Image (tube, rainbow, N blue to C red; front, side):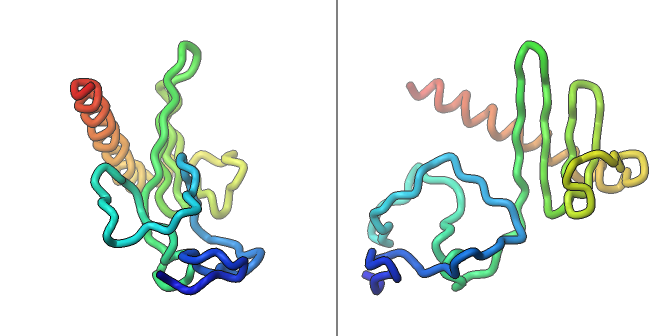
Length: 141
């Protein structure tokens, strides 16, 4: 077991207080207060173990973040990779540089067609993967 952290709990790395992270963090699950050991099975888990990154023992990973909204009044799909966000809002295609345009006011899709061509297939592939996984889980129930 790893040594206790600054608050006395074993297994958690110490992170610097008030640290600002340059990349976005998203989590749907609550963090467990119980340490995860190598001997525990990881079958069925997905995602990235954040503990080495928070403990500054591992570099940040470049990764893409995806989401979609599909309601009666709004259909949106989006991908964020690094400082770029591509948003499909109904039939509109919008591209934003979030480093220089946090408020998403300046659409760059017409100027940066190279990035649109690079990011758009990522959304399509992600949707195929997510829908196939949901179908597989639904059949297993």
